[in-house]
Image (cartoon, rainbow, N blue to C red; front, side, top):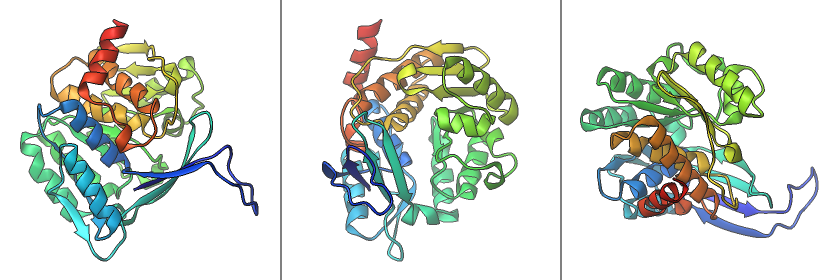
Length: 302
């Protein structure tokens, strides 16, 4: 559950600073991506969420809301021994976000969750993974996805040091979607513009062995490198309200577009439109656009 605080600035050490607004929204990277995928799928296929929540009001609220959005929540574990994960998010007047996460139930994901995910791979079109749950749980599922030729899309967030990632982890990833900060951590070089993003993308692809690297650059669009698609893709212009879930909107719609069989460039355009729409409104899961909105934005720019 995201606890979102709108504030002119962050408080200094020892200071009490009065903020503008507090509201809640369902969150978590995988939760956001699942809602984004389900809203864009619009009943075309099923989106299944794997994770863990506590038996508390936040957990109940998340499951209810996501189910209402069309996400299959049957394989989400309810754990009475731990609280549901929470993120406290500060948003400044530019829409920039500062996230402080406590993973709670998701931090205990393990064999129970990977087994459920593996059982779901037989008829799956894509597996979306992030780094908010224990890496061994994700890796077990990714290995099986690779064996079954199910595309794996990894959002490498939050960024982790190399000693936290087991050897061979990235070799099971088909598409990796870091933002500039995460690309910097993976490539070992600053990423501040399109030129540096190109260098970083090539380093990441060569170093990690992923088929496709897509670096999301917020208002500067994306840079992609792959066997058949290389280059910068221009952004959609919107007024940013909150950037906190833009990458999740991107990943969710990208996954759904791949499942539908769209070529990579068009799938990225759809994902970028979803991210742009998301940042133009407050909230996280609640900010995810529907299919008609995404298609209209892409059509208007063509």
